[in-house]
Each structure stands twice: as C-alpha cells, then as structure tokens.
Image (tube, rainbow, N blue to C red):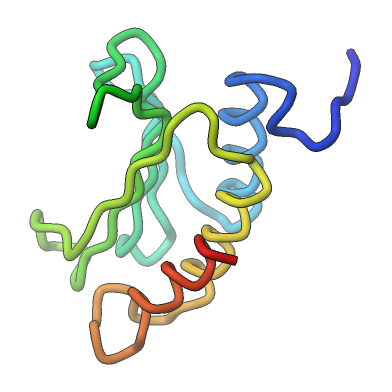
Length: 125
C-alpha cells in the first residue's frame, strides 16, 4: 500500500475510505443500502452522509455526486433542513474538515445556531 498526500490525489476510493474513517471515529453508524451506497448516521440521528458513487451514481449539473450530506431538526423527521453534495474531485481534507465542523454543532438543523454559516465558512476556507 502506498500513501499519497494530499489524500485527494489518491482517487475516489481514498475519498470513500478516509471520510468513512472520519465518520466512524465520530461514532456514526454505517450500513449498505439497497442501492449499493453506504449510509452513515450520527449518534443523535440529526446528520447523515451517504457515499453514492458506488453502483448507481447520480449527477447534479453534469457532475457525478460522491457524497451527500443531510441535516434534519429531529431524528424522527423525514424532511431534511438542507443537503450538500460533493463530487469525486473534492479534497478529502476539505470534506473531513466540514464534517468536523458539522459534528461539533449540537443542533445542526436549527437555523438559529448558525450551522449554515459554519458550513459555508468551512467550505470557503
């Protein structure tokens, strides 16, 4: 095995593995879906991340989506407050930093907590 740095130069598998490792370290649960994707949920059930680049990728704006992040106000709610989509070219480090910021918020679906601003600040940084 060879380690390539920065990690985003190592390819799509590195993006799936490194982000999966990050989410697992946060205590997120993972299971495969019927669509051959990997779905992760946070311990509080408010955050979700799905590796979608497996067997049936979808595109937004002509670009394939690798990761989809979602946030909801209540674990029992089926409606998300917001979603974010990331292409395979997204640097692993950038997505991992965004997930750290998202994980740090106690109420990520509550607009009064400034989560949206924190997400945008993490992405632009």
